[in-house]
Length: 498
Image (cartoon, rainbow, N blue to C red):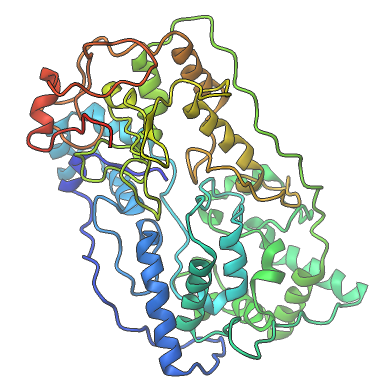
């Protein structure tokens, strides 16, 4: 997940609450009917689920009921919003630009595209079935065609998935699929052709297609028009999932007055009667979304190297330092990153990409033995770092489905997660830059960059090392380069394999 780990953020990112025990939320007034939970069972389900949410750091991105937001600098969305919202001429902009350089702030603002808005999961169980939440977490997929970010390949196990789903049901006092005697909600009776046609006409007349896609159903809105309204429709889900995602009676309440179900929603009231809302519900439950067949998913081959020189500085600026480093920080930074020392429920693989020196120190396997991510392993033809980027291209068949190009979902991948998790795959050109640099011998930086004393983020110093060429594994020297000393201070970079 793309996050900012720039130490200048500590001067401006909104401060987040420290994690603390939260009382069980009381059900709020809603148009949605609740069910009776035994108070002790409900409280235990909320407590158990909250532990899982904290373990997997779900509030690094999502707002979830009364759960405490991630402490800075771990909160992806709020820090992105803060940096993107800095305005030239305003006091915060001027102060940060004076201290760190205008070009640094402008670089961040150029590169911040994702994780600016994410779904608010507060009261999720009121509007979404708990059994669907569990099914979705077991096999995440693209739910919102205009939102390029996707659910990352999390590390939840089956019990934790159930605990999270029950948490949302318990908070909302919604039906518990794991309770004795639970019966899944029945779909409304299939309407005759005339009623289905009336539902289709009403769907178009009310402009639902201006924000939502419904599989590949033609609602009179093309992809270009939908894209033009991206700002309003960014979080609008694909309505082909409504039949399995939502209880029929909840969908009617939602269509009539969304804010009574989800006060924080941006969806406006549709101005329909209950009869019309039921007509739309029946249409969404029974219309054929006209999906294409599931595509054959195959990891693409690595591109051939370019026929020009590619320097480390170009690879760092356009690939490693733009995306990869956000999960693979150095050990002494404020958030070393899920891909280094762990986070988001992962243990981490000790892969550090902030500097050339740490990049060539590789990663650790399950036994703790280090290996180069820039050289193919035994029996492989592609370096591990490139293979991870190519796997993400294959995952796009589930995670990045364009509007009106919807298809049945292919099998969920059984391979390790592709990179970058939760974000669009690297382009051909970006992957080719990395492939070329590796093919040319992984030549290191030619000059010192960054800011002396910076121990977090883009300004962490980087520079040449004693052996400044080669893709083989080599740990940082215990005698630190002069450019590194001031930033590392007493928090020394690990120079021995763990």
